[in-house]
Image (cartoon, rainbow, N blue to C red):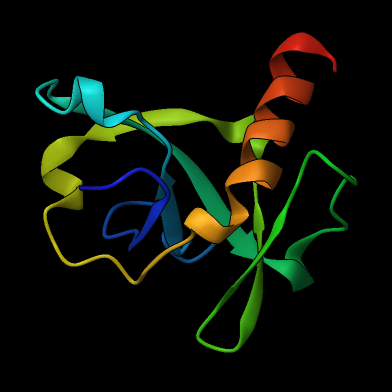
Length: 103
């Protein structure tokens, strides 16, 4: 598992949130849980600028729902990631800073 990997959601709520982005630092890889942010289709809501970065997955736009930050069992992320979104690192970190620190 790599930071900013995007995985298919194979649990409940996968219709509304089909993907999770793993944002947890690899230093904590041995923990049984992973910190993730769900993604939803852009058609489901109007994103808040800087809080909800847009991520393109398989030619569709998805919104990173930073305000829905959660954790899942690491076993839910044992399958192959759909993509690594490290290219969006700055936007993801800025969204987390905005949510937590207000900056």
